[in-house]
Length: 158
Image 1: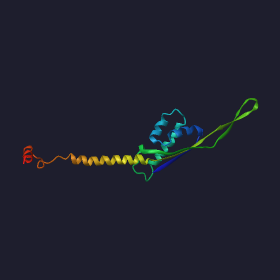
Image 2 (image 1 turned 90 degrees about the vertical axis):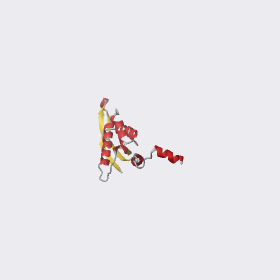
Image 3 (image 1 turned 135 degrees about the vertical axis):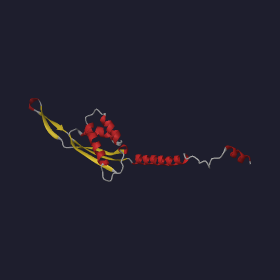
Image 4 (image 1 turned 90 degrees about the horizontal axis):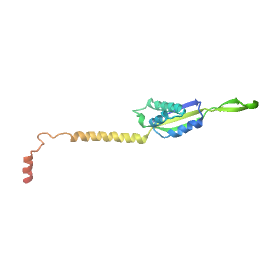
């Protein structure tokens, strides 16, 4: 199962945002949020917000079964150019230089990691199997099933 989030018109240069997108691409959402939380870059704030929104969209879907947030990974994260605001900066001798104020759009898709999901299901099946075996081996024999040591020695001698 997958979900997506689109954050549009973020007033940060797409080049700066792509640096962080490359850093978190392919990681689990919890790892990516930890990386972004302690990143010194100001671009980490809108990126973390988009990731949290995508995770929330996945967890609140109607057909979402018991989804564990630890096994959700970033399937795709893409940063596109948004509209550019064109301004002018006055310079010496009556000249003006252009100022380009760039913006970007972030597209995030998250999904349950099938490898981690299969691994977790295998671990749970193994736990259930050991619980069943453990309860059978922990069963103590009744008094009728116990053999006296002297009776066992006589049976061996005959």
